Length: 182
Image (cartoon, rainbow, N blue to C red; front, side):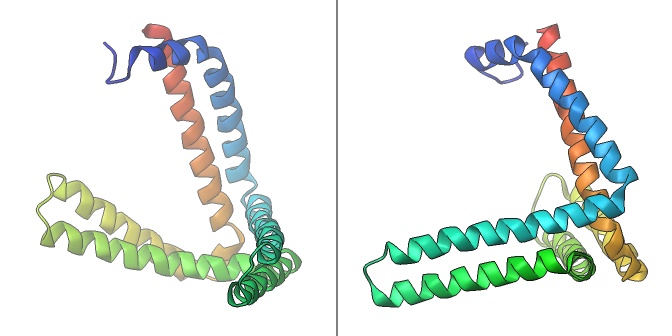
């Protein structure tokens, strides 16, 4: 059974199965720690975002000086300053920004859940039931985060990041397991 994967990709997966397993185990441990220490992982994630903005701002600033058109120069220079200032603000006030981002996340979950349900009932899709279920869970998640806000801002981002890392780890473990059976 080739699982719809070409033979050279299967060969590479099989050869690297132990690395996938090790990485998967490492990510499961890291994801579990991120969930257990959700406040710290929330702050880390928000600061990471801030530093990412700063780096993007620096690249945008360098790009602005490589342009020959004055209109583009000022636009890219403005974006550079905006990215850097935003990044500095995020890094300087990570708790405030975590709380604010969590509110936006709750609103996003609520609206995207409604959109999924509307899409399920207005379009002909073969997985309508799962899409409605997904939309309902997304709405509930948004409401639960919103009801606990602003306190949820201190842990939600860390928990969601941890869950993502945890499931990525388990996916790699399952990939390694599958590769050994091929």
